[in-house]
Image 1 (cartoon, rainbow, N blue to C red):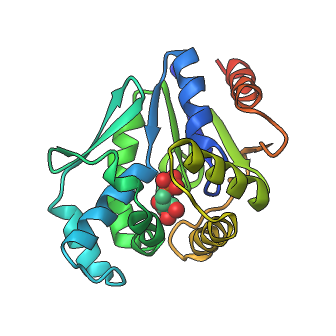
Image 2 (spheres, protein in one colour):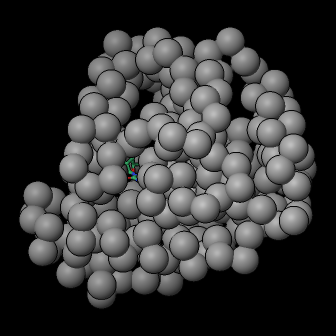
Length: 222
Ligand code: C5P
């Protein structure tokens, strides 16, 4: 089997998307960032002044929305109701509200179906919080990727600096810790390592080393 499914889960800023993108390119696989779908829904909910704590309202909003992921040169583009929102979904406002939206079980059930359909044929690396536990429970390779919260905050800080954004390291660290706490403590498919997932700690690894680790694990399963 060459068209395997690779599931990567882990907390915010562990390097999942950067590393998954590189590994996907080397394998000729499609990279699918599921967080982008929750972000797109959050963007729309904020624009439409939906009550983010209302499961019924958030679920109804998803039912009447179209969220599409399209592979691109840079990894992936996100379309919300036909409009490219790839940049907009990375705003602080979306980042700071997405975990509230992502907590609703009925809405997640729809997301999981959409995501499962995208990965059904294999040849995919999908990243998120519940991929190994809920979306692709039969994935040939499951990885739980993490790093210390200090290191994750430091990377976000450097990322922002590269993009010309000045941020406070302490504020980033708090924001990351709060998002992890909400994602891990929610009732509906919380962020947790699948029992059959391989733990990869990227604290001491650079991007190439982490990508190589994924490629090595993948080759053992192909
Ligand atoms: O991966 P990213 O940080 O962009 O994800 C944004 C948020 O979307 C996460 O903090 C989490 O609340 C939610 N999410 C989720 N399940 C996934 C992917 C993301 O609940 N599979």
